[in-house]
Length: 381
Image 1: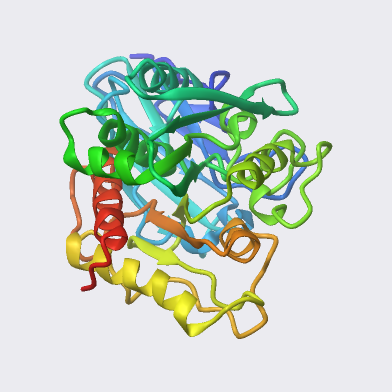
Image 2: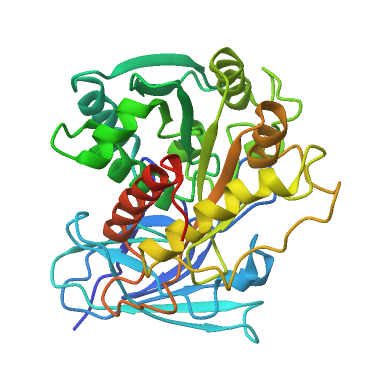
């Protein structure tokens, strides 16, 4: 009996894959680089014609990807309805094919979608912005536009004096960040949620759910339409290379910043962690304690957060001011942070079915905001 070859498509919002070959229900694949850059790690594609057959997907040349340490112990995300994202059987062999990952999955239906992490489409982004903007007490600002002509959306709310900026997806393939934003906006716009009520009372909140819509739509891991890593542009953003950062930073200059949360995902570290602003010229122990106190509060609040794994702290005077967390801390005297979530799983609280998931991103957002309520109240852990 002749069995037809599977079909693989990626010509859609955030789609990204190169098909090397297909034979029956097996395919050899490569991950293309971001446009005008060397970063390659994000993938998102659809397989059709495989109902009831084991699909075997072999990704090659992964040692040339942006973060080869992201592949050991990683499991590919898969969905048949694009609502629930589970994990497929995944193995990695660095000794063959210049680093080879093999994904096996048997779909019950004719289509299955595979991605590095659960995608967050631009259509879902616009739904999120529209729903939040229609909530009582919320205003929408179009801060500017990208090189591809997409808007930089900002949602504002609250009557307090503390200026809080939340922004996500400078690195577009870190879709965890916009799932976190969805969870945060659900808290902040729900009139029955006391965490949101307290924050709206004490703060003026500025929320940018997606700081890199061009890269998001193009299926990039880390860059915008012209290959710029936005989180290395905060000291000298330009309209030609990084209008996204320029327009956000200009808006921050208008309001000032007391608290900033820049939301990301990390390829290699199987944990949730924070990075602060050690190494800035204006560092003092007192300023550092503002961040460390928040870190302790979040660690007390949720088992999904931890402090053992994370990035090394910058040495005195060695902070990278081209990154948003350090630039915002230095520029505004803010208590700023980078929130990192895993692509893999939370190694302390693994989930066999989903790994780290959109649902846990959203729950983490609520814990982060609840910890901020305690921080504003002067609490300590």
